[in-house]
Each structure stands twice: as C-alpha cells, then as structure tokens.
Length: 251
Image 1: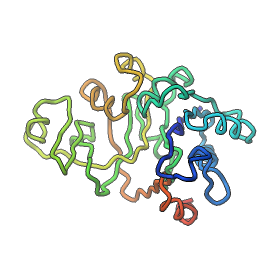
Image 2: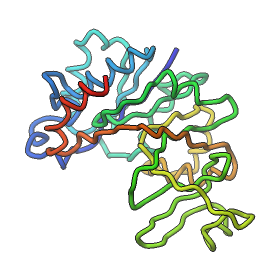
Image 3: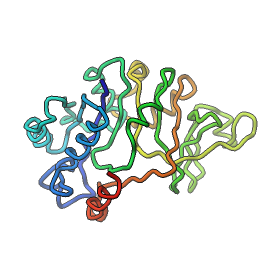
C-alpha cells in the first residue's frame, strides 16, 4: 500500500475570478480538473490510498471525486470549520492513514516531473520525514548539514534564522563552524506516521515547516536533492496558462 495526502483546502485566491465559483482542485487543465491529474499520476506510481482535505467549495470536490473511477480510493478530511494550514491539516487527518507506510504530501495545484517510485525509495526506515529540495533561487531556504539532516531555516533578505540549535541561530554555521547547505523546499515531502504523536502539543492550526523545525533535533528529518526538478505552481492565473504545455514536457 502507498498512501498520499492531497492538500486541496485552500481558498485559491490567486486564481480569482475562477475560484469565486469553484475550488482550485476543480480548475481544469487540458480538459480535466487538477485533482484528477494529480491522483491519476500518483496512481501510475502505485499509490492506492488518498486523503484529500477540503474547505472551499468542499461539497463540490467531494461530489466530483466520488463519481470518478478513483473515488473508492479517496477519503476526505473536513476543514469546513477552519483552514488548518499544512501541519494542522495533516494532524487532523491522522486517523485516516495506515500507521505503517509513509505519507506522500502533495499540493493539488502543483505540477512536477518527479519520479515518485524513486522518491518513495528515498524514505529510509529510520527517517521521520524526507523533504524534496532543489538548488533553485528563493528568499527562504532550508538549512542542512553534510548528511542532509535538517538543521534550520533562513530568510536571506532579512537574515532571520530559525533553528532548534542556538549556535546556528547565533552564527548561521554548523557546530564546527562550517557552512550549512541551503536548498529550496519544493513543498513535496514524505511523512512517517510515527511523527503524529509529536504533533499533540501543537495547536489545531500550524505550518508543517514549523513542526519540522521544532523536532529536527529529536528525529531524523532529511532532504533529498533533485537537480533537474521542474515544478509549476498552477495556483495563479498566469501559470495556469502554461500548465498544459508543461504537462506535455514532463509526463
């Protein structure tokens, strides 16, 4: 069994006016809704259990998915009462997952060229989470040591550093004075259900990155680099126009 969570609860504000009347999960690319593209692609890599969190036009997503061929493989995590962000959404959905298999976390509005058989193999038994990262330029980077263990986060514009390690917060360097490795997070990650108990002290609503940064000194959170990573954020109108040609070049 291979399981995944599709994050589909967002308001889709960058896709207005389309999302004034529909959820972003049902915005079409090449004649099919985004959620269909994501689930069908993951099923092609052997995924057969999906949890989809819903909030904005939640009933529309549920009604659509239930009549699809893949509907029997999907369960819903209801966030109608409140959007819970990436960490809170995962925490709320905890009981819907099998305890034994890592959970692939994927946004409904992200298209990519990842080989998910390869990515699944990167999650070793002793690891709590595996974060897919790349060398693309951004303002905010995750910090890793030479073994690619997560050590912190840095905003290069403001100089802000977040880390459970005081010496990193003070110097931005490793314990031995070495530079840490900076990589951009793709938003795609593999999460071990063994981490759910560590979420108990967190509120209902929180970011998954805040969670990882708070536990990376206690458990093995690692990064995996994909140098040829191609990602298209289809959560905005201008990139939506590129989506169809992007899929043709990556699938």
